[in-house]
Image 1 (cartoon, rainbow, N blue to C red):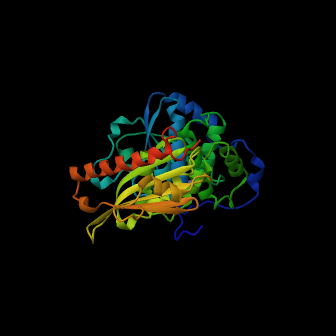
Image 2 (cartoon, rainbow, N blue to C red; image 1 turned 120 degrees about the vertical axis):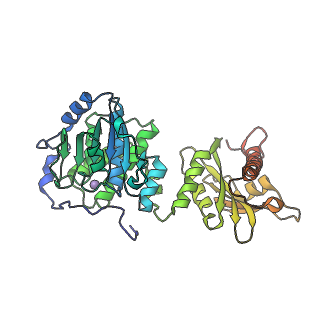
Image 3 (tube, rainbow, N blue to C red; image 1 turned 180 degrees about the vertical axis):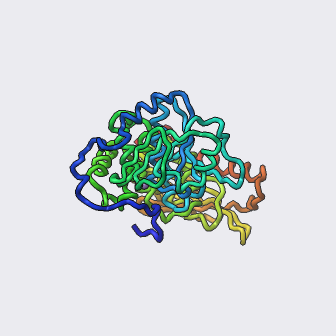
Length: 399
Ligand SMILES: [Mn+2]
């Protein structure tokens, strides 16, 4: 990886090889809390609400494992909320949370706006033992009992938990949670997007904690093999493009949320962007075109240049359809300006357009005017694109 800092916390994990190779696919029998004990615990706490605490700067292993536990617990009608006290400090972690919709929330103690702790009947520590979470003591002081610890770090504290699954020889907590899944605590379903996203997150967590599997032991490889049936390789690839800034991620997220699909074409308007973020538009189009059954993606937004008080609609097209000529498509869709110039064009597989906002330029903070202006451009661009995409009236058919 070409990251300037590792997305992972430094752990006290021993990296000796060999001894664990013989334990095979099953859960370590010598553990204090094998999967059956976790199942018993979940049964005993049916209908309750639990708070899951992560380390202050959660890594992919912690985030994905907590999510997997939350999904498992839900099948036992246990509702879980995931919290961390610090921040998501790495682009890759932000990408993971944004792109999978991972339900972890930040709780800043100083703000005094944390969750109502009376709601919880138990706290669960995932990928930590409370020593790396500033939230742990306040939660315990409020009288929330420690019901479960799932971790692979060496023992750090005397834990008064109802159940402890602490296995320092396992290289990632994600491996432990994958074993829970494999042994039937939750049956993953490939057609459930939450499940495929969680499997993708677990794969990422497992890889991140094992230096891309280079430090993995047999258990981790077996867990990865299991996850390989459910995870989304393209989504994982998107998460690993860690050089994207948070604002680029926001635009990609917006494009995912706003996209409309017709005849295998995905079209998304992303609203206003700052000038320096305009590169997010082609990146969002690159991402949308990777979706299953999509051959062409168009993403556009209004980019405003604060210095020059100038606004322009910027759009990008990406296609994997050989018979679709992006240049022709864009010229056909948007036509020419008063001076006979086309608003855009393309090359093989990609194209772009720029439409000046002109007289309507001018950005007013949170104004109704901005909203109206966006709606007008959004609607006009969509109309012009759908006219081409829709085969009934289509100029270019997309069978
Ligand atoms: Mn870990």
